[in-house]
Amino acid sequence: MPSFLCHRIDSLHSALLVIIIALLLISGCQNGAALVDPSDPPPSQLADNHQPALSSGSTTQQATATDDPLVLWVPPFFTINTTDRADAVLAAALAEFAPTPTGSSVTLVPKAERGPAGLLAYLLTTQQAAPILLPDIVLLNSFDLVRAAGAGIVPPLSAEESAPFGGISPAILTSAQIDNQLYGLPFVANLEHLVYQKERLAAPPATWGELLAQDKRLLFAGGTVDDYSLSFAWTLYLVGGGGLDGEGNLTSPQVMERVFDFLAAGKQAGLIPEAALTLSSPQAVWTFFVNGDAEMAVVPARLYHNQQAEADSIRFAPLPTLDGEPRTVVTSWSFAVVTQEPARRQRALALLQQLFAPHIQGEWSSSARQVPTQSDAFAYWDASDPYTLFLQELLRNSVAAPNLRAFNELNQSLQQGQRALLTGELSPQQVLEMLPFRP
Image (cartoon, rainbow, N blue to C red):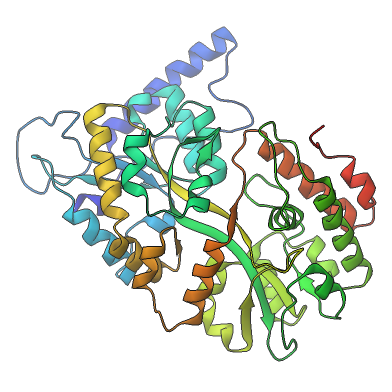
């Protein structure tokens, strides 16, 4: 069996890690020190399926650190568990990567996307307890990439290292930059757009004014307050031309004022249903939408792509913007190279070059229904599908969500302010007074 298909627990690594954590916990209790920041809780059990790849042949040769298989920590959508086309493309790409003298070259270690057993929690805890067990590469979302970089786990990429990846869309590449340095290579783009019921809406509104001038309702996930979601107000601000400075201050108070006036007017006119205040996930929004609770909804591209069986009566369109120009906000899942050992780092970058080959990224993303980050990858999608052309156009006009260490705090303030506005607790002006604007 290829090594990257194996996910059994390696008893030696697990036992070693448990012992190290126990010793550090004892030491931490004696010194009054915590292993990790309390705001980023560690997993309850760090010892899981992290194990070296199995050799494809019998040998007694001891592998060096350079020869050991590359270890990738990945979210569940990038694993090989089934026989579908996406998994087959990924398996073939990894199998083609040059094997080491002692066996296969790559081990995929799946972890949850977020939470106490998620990628970031494992990175933070492993860095504190046993840095030797950190992966060579990790696939992180934009929000966690900032935190991993701030914790010193992920070093920036040099210009020489990033040069072979020039096919990544510039706007999407920005989603992996922090303080003007590139920390990851975006592989999957996350973006939202409008969906609408074609039998109940002849044409979607292009501007906020057009939406307010008709009587069709709009749903979005307005009940979310977490570190992994952009509030609808924040999305509207960015697609409306608003920005942030390097200190995390909003630079366009007029645009933000227009955003809150639009949301308040929509709620007052009954165009934003009460359900928008409680829906906390895109899937919940989709369920309410297809059940007829609104004529329009804001959903992620991946969700729409996976629900095309229900799409006969549903059409897609860009989000309405202030000026009517089609834009969207993009975040990403980026490969970050963790290892700093020169030979392993070189191998890691070589593997990523192979995964970013347009035919591999294109075929995998098309089958996995994930949005690729390179325009050349769309050549391997169905060119006759209008949705393919729609996504390409949106990505060309995308705006990256800012990757600032102060962004998470600002994003939560916007989420809370949006909710207070929609419930009538605060006026647009009162919400504006909660936010930091550039002096």
